[in-house]
Each structure stands twice: as C-alpha cells, then as structure tokens.
Length: 298
Image: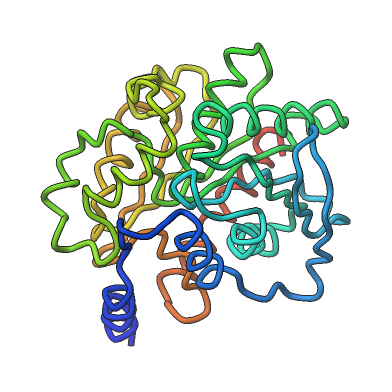
C-alpha cells in the first residue's frame, strides 16, 4: 500500500511543479490553496502576538511544553496558517502548546527580516516566562532553515537554547552548492535549480548567501540543542540536510538524520494519506517529548 501511496503522491506533484514564470502574488495564492487544511476543533486555534510577531496559537491549555513553529514557502510564500497543519501534527501527538508565527516575507521584507522575526518570537516566548527547557522549535523547508538561523541568532544574542529542534526538508544552503541540486533533478517532482534560484533571489535581495544566517549548513553550529532532521531521498535539497547533519556532528551537537526512501520534499505534509508521513510525525513528536523530559531531568 505504501508504494502505491508514494507513486500517487509523486504523480500528483509532477502535475503541478513549481513554475518560475509566475508572479509572487500568483505563487502565494497557489501555495495557500494547496497548503491550508482544516484544523481539528480541539486545537483551539486562535490569533495571538508573540514578541510583537503575529502568530496562530494551537492547544493553548497543553502542559507538555511549547513549540515554536516556522512555516515553509521559500521565505516568499506561506503563513502561520499554512504551517499550522504540521504544527498541529507535532503538537497534538506530543501534548504541546504550539505557536506558528507570521514572519515577514520577501521580496517586501528581504533577508534578514525573517531571522529578526524568528528571534523576536523566540525572545518573546522566553520573556513571557517560558523556561528554555520547556521550549522546542520546528520548521519545514525554508522554515527549517529559519529554525536553524533562529537558533544561531539566539546564540549570538546570548539567549539560552531550547530543549530541541526538529526540521523537515530544511533549506539550509542558499548558495545552492549541494550536489543533489543536480543529481536529484529528475527524481524531485517539485523543484529544480531554477525554482530554487527564484526563491533565493527574492529572499536575499542582494545579500551574500554565504552569510551563516542565510545558509546555516555553512555555519558553526556549536552549542545548539539536540536536532532531528527528516528529509526525503527524492529531493534536490537532500544535501542540505546531509551536510547540516555533518556540520552539527562536527560541532558535537546531538543530531539524528532520517532519510525517507523514495519520498519528496516535506512529505510529512501528507499525514493521513501517506503511511510514512504519519510514522515520521510520530517519531518527531517522540523525539521532542524525550528531549523535553531529558531537559527536565525526568
């Protein structure tokens, strides 16, 4: 059954690959239509502001800890609402309160605006009284890269690190130097180099992609918290995860890399229709629960 699910997903994505000729407005409308799904009533979703950043809060009464979620969309598309299904997938399984933020998007607000907003939200959660060992981060695609950048920015600001972080198919190298940008070109049903350049050009706005807050796979990751990276093998961004894991290991960061065979970019979005997606979210939520318990000495 799982192979049938994977094949059907691959075919469905290939029917609607990213088109670099679209305008930003057209791309945003298409992304929102494809990503926004109903949230369960028990999520108690409500708009809030965290550190001055608009956000969507889920499971406000949960006591297991707080999850700060950073949505994907190449730093150009998406919102807290499009990130909410994955935030819900983690929070509901792990018993966490979740906060998905609406960080500023490019090209209207290019780099480093998203990093500034991620840091402001993280600082706001700490200043609200949440202890760092009761806080975890997660993000997908560009939101995964932003998760790493937020951790690096927090370190630079002298803030304590959270208990753990989870990233799904993170985009961590805006120089596009990973070998799989070429070797996985035919395997990836969604992206190619041209598509990645479309997003990178709009986000960077002329900034140097070598900057570690733009490309965390090139950064010194010393002092960061335990990290779980999940990625599909059919991704041009596969090397972004592999090299991020190696970089973390070099810095003595506890890191777990999971590569899902024959799976596409952010396959976790298919929970409920793809067995591997449900299993991956289950492992990710257990990772967060275990690291929160470890941080508390339980």
